[in-house]
Amino acid sequence: MIPTISLILGLVAAPLVPQTGVLLAVLSGCLLLTCLLWRWGLLQSLGVLVCVFLLGMLMGQRIKHSDVNDCVVEAVVFSEPAEKPKTMAVDLLLPQKGRQVRCYLWKDERSKSVALGHNLLVRGVDKGFVRSKDWQFGGQGVAKLSRIERIRLYFLLKRHQLLNRYRALHVDDDQYAILAAMTLGDKSALSKELRETYSVTGASHVLALSGMHMGIIFFLLYHLTLGRRHFMLSQMVIFIGIWAFAFLTGLSSSVVRSATMISVFVFFAMAGRRRSPVNQLCFTAIVMLMVSPASLYDIGFQMSFAAVLSILLWLTLVERFLPEDYFAKHRVQHYFFGMVGMSLAAQMAVAPLVAFYFGRFSTYFLLTNFIVVPMATLILYGALLVLFLPVFGPALLWVVDILNKALEWLSQMPYASIDGLHPSVFQLCLIYIAVICFYWLVRIFAPSPNLHPSDRVFT
Image 1 (cartoon, one colour):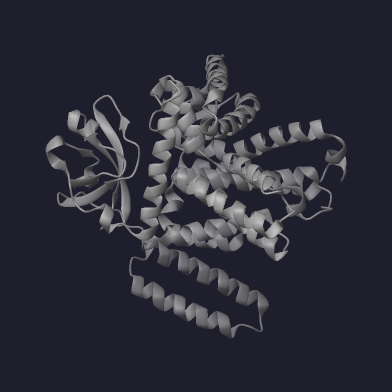
Image 2 (cartoon, helix red, strand yellow):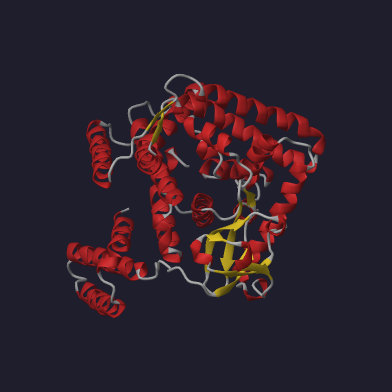
């Protein structure tokens, strides 16, 4: 965990030293000095942390904030267009610049015909809002995509076909929006009212595919591949299936985090090595930051890793106070402990970030999770069933309706949320310092662990 923190601190401190050449020289010197300290273990460990910190600063130089420009660029539509009152919101991939931007095309008959995979020529793409005269169909954007971007586009087109299957079920707008978001990661159809209902009740996390959804897919694949009967084959099928689902749902940061963690788990299992979930999580963070340093400033990345880290640390710690075989003899208590424990642990890590970014705290989050977690599981499995047997479509829509009505009722309860919080950065840091101190205080009085954390908790 400490190397991961050093890397993150380096990314944050990157703007302080804009000269890349200076960083390379200092990093090279530190690497050489660290190698020379092989006889002094503690000093060498400190040297490694300094090198990781400098590496983070070097990686941070790759984060460039683009300026507004008026040049015409080739772009590829890389999302389902979302209709707004006056615009059409789309994600555009810029092959020549190697990045993706969110644009709002002025709504007219021409912009309404924009679809996933179309080539566009756009002027002033960095402005966000694009007037009708500043874009047109054309260009060779798709031909200039890299191989990995072509694979992403292929899976997004497959997702588009699956979304059309949902529309064929004669669903209303809210039913389609929830199915698309909860099963395929497409949130373009979510209305403002529906987003607000899920936000007030603290259920927004089920609309963004996360570790819960990937865990459901993992256990489904595990049972379909006969578990340990054909171990090596089943692990490879799980690996391929997890990443196919990740590409199909758009490769959001939470999905990539979960897919990478499961991949690490699979390869360690194949190698017969003991797996520590916290180490897996830290390794996943390092990999994602190495590939895309800008992910550190993504809200989804921050919340996803904070929630999972908190769950892994707190649940393992609290289990020390219980008898070793307690959950083996009390299955019902195990379910409620897992539900309550994960909800509280995740909330301790995520609530300060939600207050910081959105100024809100959902007071009924615990009750919400008892509703949305089992319902989300039914919807995800039901959607897989309906894709092969559409006759079960009405039953799936009935479940979606129950979930929406339950959350709507919950959002109308008194004091469903506390708004207008907005703590400062300094206050946010103080909150997390208090949480960390509370964790270490509980750890001091906790009994010694009987089992390795990987034998107790896997998320």
